[in-house]
Length: 501
Image 1 (cartoon, rainbow, N blue to C red):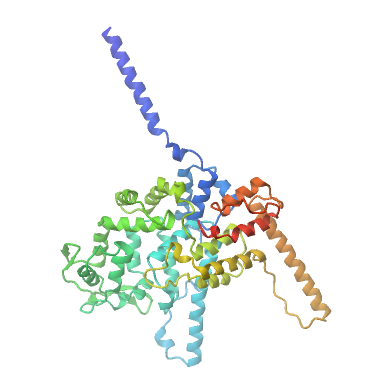
Image 2: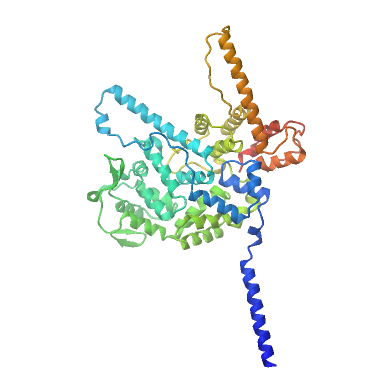
């Protein structure tokens, strides 16, 4: 009898253990189910540039975990379109150029100015054409965090190199990114590290490192700034090669007292001490929260994510996975509560309708007028966020861009110059150009209808899905339903709700 009870006891333990194992393997119901249309739209509108129906439907086949993993895969292998032809051009000999005749010096200055514009045009084209838009969103985020200004660079290629630096570190460790940015030539020039010497420390970089890059305002003392500046003395440039150079003779090798510690600290030691401060991970998390989730971070969730990031030794991939799987990211109240920045608005519109980008100067022009001149932030704090992007003037400019760009569908044909109106040859060319424009215009219309899966005369269900795609918060009960599909899209684009993401 005793043996029978013993066997029953072991059988119970076996069944209980198997059930527990199955329960442990069973995924959370909130992440196991495939994404709803609204969830897929929310994820893509926050992490990529623009959305359309065809794109959203392809993501509704994934669970939350699978969708986030697909996003993170973009960070591991970001796609890069062809760089500018001069991207590997050697650093010029400015000393010899300064001795050349005025005409040659002016020609060189025109070349430098053209490079400044070309880099910006290249990045707009990259954002519009890449197959890894989340990677570009993160590059844009880090560019606005570790700010540098093109207008201060006498060699514009430094800004291109910094852009590539952000791209190389997308899936790596934040510590390696922070160390790299301390030695980045664009940053060395922008925040005057090249003038930071023993006995004459320049505090610009140290101040922004603590206030804007790592801890946030109020989490350090003035003494910490002075000591950090001493630790970064000697960080300068090799003026013959245009690269970073550590000059030992200009470094202060004395004892520094920083954040309650004392030692013969170098710049790398300062970075390590900052990384050990929990406030750093919380500060970056709060900034990411305002960029991707909502205007007001949730304090407890911020601390949880920050702890997890520190636990993973500041590895970016596991941290971003937890960040985008946070329940707060998926809450309905956190949808459509952020304002698109000018770059998100412009690039998102182009990507949503898959419009050709033959002339990105239009995007650069409107970006400047709307207050976001890429690679040239207004100051070291970077660009503002949220409602600061919207005022009467900017809203009118956004609507003006939509009217012009959507009505023309970005269709361009080769410009032909005519000798006079009565020339038979010119009339034939003019007629041929009109036919070509109409053909491309019709082709673009068919592509837009396919992207948003609309018939020329949309049904009620198609209109409802179009609303959920472009303006989910808009009440369209008063919108006329008898208009064509393209006219309906146009009406949705002109509503203020389209400015939200």
